[in-house]
Image 1 (spheres, rainbow, N blue to C red):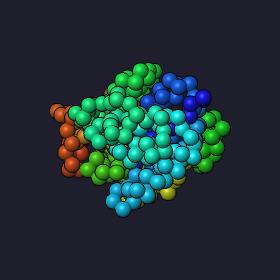
Image 2 (cartoon, rainbow, N blue to C red):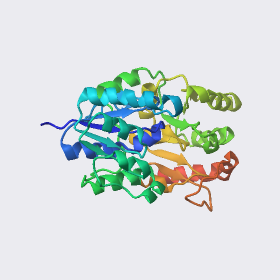
Image 3 (cartoon, one colour):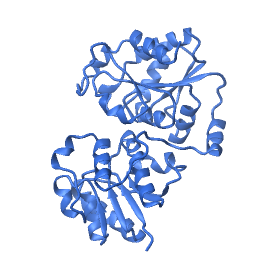
Image 4 (tube, rainbow, N blue to C red):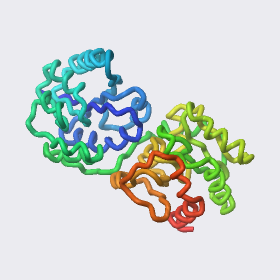
Length: 331
């Protein structure tokens, strides 16, 4: 019997999904077969992962609580049963996909098994409850190691076909050198101040490092880009808040480098192999050891702490960011 593999990941943040890509690839390589995914629609995985060769079908499912909990379980059962999977891998600790796989009579249900989830797995191999303190990447690494699955690559990588890249770049009307700023974040306390982005742009422009800057942010956070454009009174800023995610990927691939907040676009940029500088002042950089992101931090920065106050981002000065970028670019 030929194996048919499904991997389920429930987190809604784009960056969290991107960090799981090496482990999805490792599972595919271990079984020597392309794998299917079930993820949240909010990740837009069907768009950003469409050219990754070891991925086959991508299905969307919500992972809600309360009244909708069992509705989503039944949706999962329909997907899992309909595809007749032999293996279901769950890369986080929630119960819902494990319950759905069990009710679908899947013979191999593999997951972290932290706390209640272990009751629904078909294996006794599981992480310890204390492992919930590990990062999501570390949990997946430990899970795969326990099951003898070798991880060849630790850094996320997103492929884009040359044809698709040409198509994306056709939609870019600006000529000259471009860089990108990621100016928003899901959590506002992680956002560097608009005035700081303006001042950094002036310093970089003075050194002749760009002709235009793509301002990357979501439609719902457009006010950050608008404030930068209006307050700076510069015509080199390009508001990308109206772009679809695929077009944002085109803008990132058209950029010499990226500077941005701790958010999905930062992780997307790094996975697209763009030199990516992350702005960190009140969140850990220890999580970046499995990423190509280059962290920029204040003097006297203390790692492994969350301070949910945007004012902490003021500690990361424009001068420090500019000097660190210039050093990394060998200027």
